[in-house]
Image 1 (cartoon, helix red, strand yellow):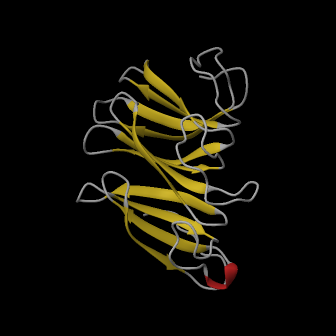
Image 2: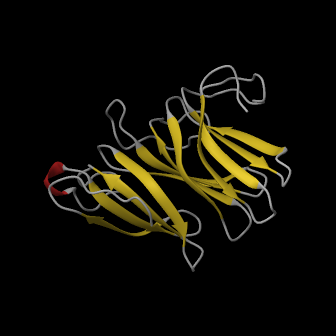
Length: 197
């Protein structure tokens, strides 16, 4: 699977219908097996396969700069949630600017898809500096728990500053429609990161 430029697989998971969903980064336009053009530099490329490995649908999602999938899971309503890192401002599919004004700074871009891969809602979450999501899981109330690292002070969505200006854990609980319920910045003066939640 791929197009005329670089395409990277980041994650693939089995789905409840016996198929699979894959997510990665793509710089390809419409070419070879890619049916949608890229929007910016790297975009999310999400592909749903049936039980025999045939492509059921695909969606290229992105803004004007680099956007990468970090985690993805099937949700209890039969859709999918994508946890990604984005350098893009409002452009393409992206409806919110980054909080971070600096070049190559990233925010979390949480995207909810329905079963056919159509965007249902999205939320850009971040502060002034680099914020990088690494893990997502669904909670019993239908919301989501996000595990990330953050260097941001109190800015944007961030209500607690990073300790000593280093990278800390930033745990965020959001509702089933992506609204922040609570958050906690946890760490010390060196680098602290979430690998799984």
